[in-house]
Image (tube, rainbow, N blue to C red; front, side, top):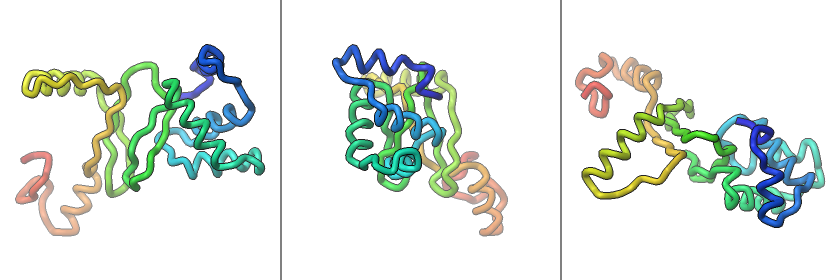
Length: 161
């Protein structure tokens, strides 16, 4: 997703905020990263373009973008917040804790999960950006091979159980 497909300038103006070169640079740097990105990486990318850019400017810009719904924060595996440009449609991920691979998952699957949560708990899920952490199939297979096990056999936590 790119911020060029959003009308972020209008969103800032409607909120009474200025469109600045620094804010645009922060969004450019976030888009160049191509996904969930920690603030340090956004800052380093932006500093390559403008070495005078201060880390506090990046923090403030991201805070504004999150508040206005332009950017979505999500907790990363490293405990830091990671940022991503908001998608126009609900956008959900599976993230492997071992290798970090991200896999997008179907909005329909999440909707059926939300329906099940509502039926069982009476809780209305209001997330259009859900991240589920676990272990991908490749890492599970690698782990099974290292342990000398067949995938899914006598392996607690295997998806086939």
